[in-house]
Every structure is written in C-alpha cells, then in structure tokens.
Length: 251
Image 1 (cartoon, rainbow, N blue to C red):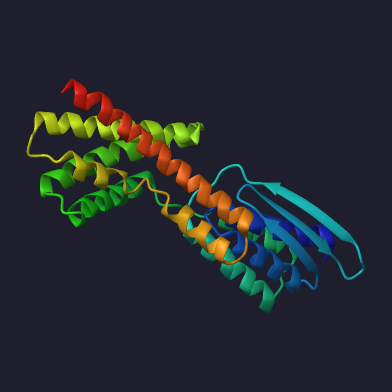
Image 2 (cartoon, helix red, strand yellow):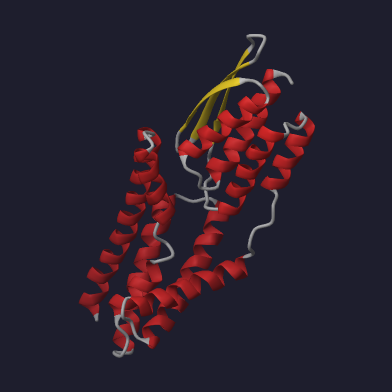
C-alpha cells in the first residue's frame, strides 16, 4: 500500500478517537499500531486540538500529515469501535478502500437520540440529588432544571457558540432558578438543587483524561485537558455565584 494511503487511514482513525473523547496516549498508540500493521514506521504527536503524524515506508518515502480537531464530544462507543478496528488490522490488514469504508461506518454510526440522552441526564440529576442528601422535592426540581439546561446546551452546540459562555449562562440559570424556587416554596433547598442540576455538566471525562495523559507523560495534552476542565468549572461556578449574589439580595 502507498505511504500516503496508510497515513490517511491512520490520521482518520486518530481524528475519530480524539474528537470522541479519547486520551492522547491512546491516539498515538492506535496510530502506531495501524502503521505497523501495514509494515510502516510512524511517529505521532497528539494534542487536545490536533494530530501530527509522520510515516516512513519501506522504500524510504516519508509522508507528513496534520489534522485539526475543531469539535470534541464524549462518545466511548466510537472509541471502542476504533480500538477494535486497529486490533483487527494487526491480524488482518485490509485494503485501503475497505479500511476507508469501515472508518466511514464508524463515523456515521448511530448515536443515542436526544430523548434518551435527556432521560439519562434527568435521572442522573435526580439520583445525585438524593445521593447528596437532598429530598424527593429537591430531586424533582433538580431533574426539571437539568432537563431544560441540557436541552438548551445541545441546541446551542448544534449552532456553535463560545463554550465557556455556555457554561457561565448555564450556571447563572441554575442559580437563579434554584433561588427563585426556594423563595416560592421554602420546602425546597437551593443547595441540593444546584448540586443535582450541575452534576451532568461537570467535565469529568476531561479531568480524568487530563490526569491520565499527565501520568503517561503527555504533559502538553494532559495539562491542556486539565486546564479546559478547570475553566469550564470556573465558568459554571462564576455563573452560580453571580446568580446567588444578585437574586438573594432581591428576595
């Protein structure tokens, strides 16, 4: 197979991994496996926003490729499919056209629809409110607020928006609604509602991946992911504090 075709397969697989929440070390390891499967040697550097690879063929031909990652989300199903794909290539390296077809199928693999994601987010919010010693009314209010915030965030992401402003506004809305509902219904505890409503928005995967990348020695990617997660938490916290400061004075 031509060097540029192997590079195209490897960088496309890496792009799918990185854009669906995989760690940097996993991207680099997968690209290395794909190159070795076709008898090529490859070097790869993966960061939070891009992949850089250089592949050398048996004839000495060298191909360098760069792929920019503009959108990221968490989809571990696609990460698992790429892992299986790379392991399969080590046992049976398929032709370029077949590899591209498989990668295209993985890219277009069905995802959970918005209704199921909303149900999962709502139930997570409900359970975590109870877990942090909230009452049943607290959990129901947290579930309702979380459903609204999650739906709005999903729609905003489809349009494309400044990420940190999204989380600031989410925190602002959660804080404002929690204080307002507690004012109307004193049986509701705003602290429990806030805790349950924000739990789905916390960037747990980014934090975990950042720490894992640092432990594996990928300091650039690890610190970038860790920094992004902390900025999201700060933006959301700033929104909540702003809402509490404003609304608790008025009510």
